[in-house]
Image 1: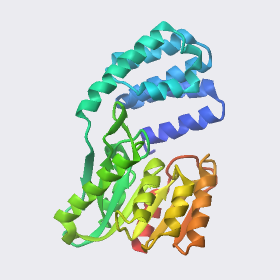
Image 2: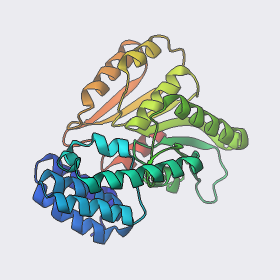
Image 3: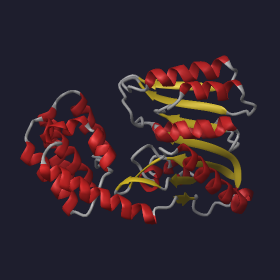
Length: 309
């Protein structure tokens, strides 16, 4: 039997959470902390949210304290917007913990810089497609590269997984400042191509959620020249702006949208797909009826098929 990955556990947790099965979700967190100790800090935050929802204030504060005492942090802005923690927001200890996180965020910002993960097939010197993968919000390049690396291991592509400099927690990054995000991605891709252009047959932009939105805007703006885009559960921030870009687009590429039927952002993805089709931009959309805001289980196969087209 295949060992569960943290991503598998995360999907299972949010399925239970969204279904209102709070007691089962809490039980699963205990299992996650044992099975994935390096991800225990994320589980601690989920535990705080669940206990707060159950109005178990002491247990919620205890989970946040454990997160703090492990040396981790999460953006106070994100925590304060989390309605699951509403029941503890007036607690003095909650405020003290947020102050610690605020200081840790400030310290991290002084050192934060864009990073990248580069993967190439072993012993292959032929020209191959380069996949540039942009992580989702509250992700990072190392974890995100796992979804794409099968293409590398099969000798079908090289991979450049990029990580934003905008840190929102321990090991968690976002592309919220779009101007900075686009500058970082453009510079890192151009740097890679200036060194390895002889090994790249075509450029493919890939991303999930916030990263998918960023990939599409970069392509439509002409900042990068991909031949294909692979957009997984895209979180399009500004459909009006995308529509304007689509109408003025002069570039040629194929777009593949992978969406979840249970994803709250599906409606926007469908709207963008229609706009692309109306303006004669090649776009194929695959909707997984029972999937939420995540990757499909057969993504490796889907990606390999896209590379073979």
